[in-house]
Length: 497
Image (cartoon, rainbow, N blue to C red; front, top):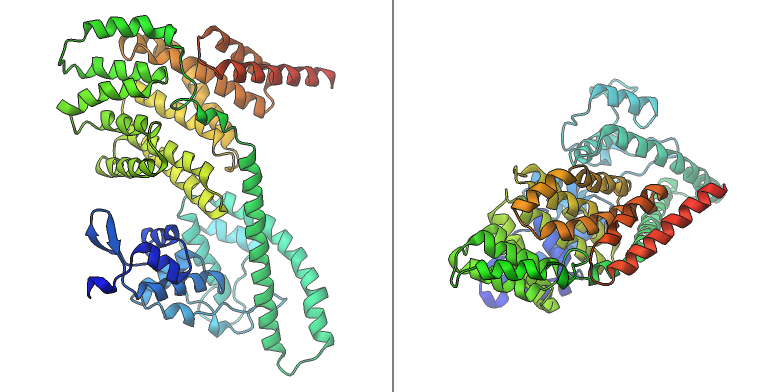
């Protein structure tokens, strides 16, 4: 195919009436073929991709097919996108049985579901065994449900959580069905039609479309409310949190610089200086020492990830996108480098703040947690790496309030750091001498803030007061005193009850 006929991603997105981000996601999920890489930063797409994207969107929006099912259908039909148009969602009668089981979605997999889970599903009447002489144990509709549940559970959900969610939704849907019968179906019965079955299918499609529209609108509003409560002032401060006043560590930094010989390739000393200036929030000086390491160790992952991270705070938005891609490539080239994955998780967390669409927020949240999980999986015995990852996990609570129960998880992560304070103080005296002066006040502040959020006010007061003894740059002191005030008010309110 001639290059002139190929499309750039922007052109493809415009013709298919989607965003470039959607196209990239479809490719990532295996729904679209990979583009042709003409240059390092230029990918071109076959014009046929326009109809492919439209078919996927139609299957999502009009047939309510999940992406995992769309991918399975495409795989089984050799990526014939017309197969998505031939799949029909069954109409369901008020008794719960399908009106035309021969037109059900095909059974795609053999569900791997434990017998005790099947028993609970039957007890809750979520599924039921077939009552006729057919060979399969369940009706076609229930078999399709089991297939989807099996695929969904493979993502990591526990069966008990999934069952609990289904039972809760079941109760709500039963109420919806009552209103549906009284209003829509009741009205149809009082106005007889020659083709009642077609009308029933239309009613089902209308209801499903309306429920989905309402659901996504509500989800967007819920996440928007959560985002509006985030403390964006934390992220305007330098690096991952608040910074140490220059005078607190200036003498130690100057003493270390005196020991550094011109042209020295002492990686540890150069890294200590870079980290020290980072703790002050001085990324420019940090970059100066990291640049020296990169000259004699250009492939060192730790140096490169900090080089990318510190530059993030000194670059324009368009350059930050390029730096993010560099970090993604670094993680891809070093998949077992846990620190790189931890910083990648934080970058996704920053992106959550910029996202408005509920789907995009959930996608970024998932990427963020996946990187943290991978970082822990490849964690070495290095105590600093462990501390850094635990701290990042705790701090992610500021961004990931959309995840139920994540605040308690973050509290445990930060508490784990405090439990090892003596060991860490000894470690940082011998390694990275400046880091502990940044670590402890930040840990006290953020853990105390989380204590306030969950109502542990007395513990919050004790912990936050410890942060007063550290020389931190503004706005640390203002935030600290504000949280102490909240904690004291909480204690007083509890006493008055």
